[in-house]
Amino acid sequence: MATTSTRTPAIAGLGITEVGKVYGRTAPQFAAEAVRLAAQDAGLALGDIDGLIVSGGLSDAVGLGMQTELGLTRLGLFTSMQGYGSTAGQMVQYASMAVQSGMVDTVAVVWADDPLKENKGGGAAYGEHAAKTPSGWMPITNSGGALTANNMYALAARRHMDAYGTTSEQLGAIAVAQRDWAAMNPRAQLRTPITLDDHQASRMISDPFHLFDCCLVSNGGIAVIVTTAERARSLAQPVVDVLGWAQAHPGLTGMRNDDFGLISGAATAGPAALRMAELALDDIDVVELYDCYTYTALISLEDYGFCAKGEGGAFVSQPGVLGPNGSLKVNTGGGQLSSYYLWGMTPLSEAIIQARGQAGERQVDRHARVLVSGNGGVLDYHSTLILGNDD
Image (cartoon, rainbow, N blue to C red; front, side, top):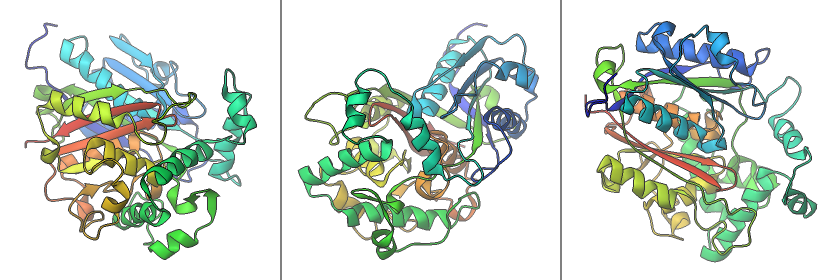
């Protein structure tokens, strides 16, 4: 296959399994179903796929066995990836580069996990994972009581509060706005609207985080098909071009540094992805952020430049900024706080749905340019995608 300048990468298929409290199925089964759904969505046969990139969550069960599970042969690209919450964006980036180079024509990218078990809460699933004996410096952190991501992100959020005066009520404004979006999303796990009083009254998880500051835990799988824009135009769905991408991996959690909690990889990856796409921030119509916590969404908005550093709390709590009637369309499906938590696939899937114009009641009017973020570790890993639809 010759490499040409016309091999612009695009997303042509999206497959989403049933998500949420779905029991009796394994992560590989979710993954296989998601790939089949994505191929069907695009109007392709499984045999049309010549590249496969896979990833799983806590179980890490979605691995190289997926080729056999799907019955795919003679792949030109096949790998398993792990970048925590930044993985989905990274997988699309590598698939895009493979398509752009001519290495392959059609790549399926899939992520799935099954942490929820009957009669056991999501907190237990992640708590058991965190309790496994860590290596390196982590036992020192654990000895101080910071055992889980809740604890570490709480420290980061508290640092932001101490530095800039950010308040719990300001974080709550994000939770309230995203629940309003989720109310219009049939796939969302939590669709009952909440008020700021509800947020403040919800139980404390890890100070300063209340329950409604923390993301859901979900079972399920999501896959996307990346191919050339030229080929995508002949397939079944509106073309979603992959216009720009970048990564940034500060890796500062285990270090004593002045920036922990105050800055994320979005500050580096966001401008780089926009430069690749030859766009400015003002060109972005929809913003789909990784929101494992309300704080994560807030710091991402600051670091992408939607408001000045340290002014995120005041920005998100202004009337008329967030929510379905707001001026900034953020996490339009409800995000990981209210819709479903499939790591970086949550913002990516909603970005594709919005770019296609297929979001139904929650569809935004302007959706030609969409920014997608992925965040992993405790602000350790980051990916940014810029998607577009000119049809």
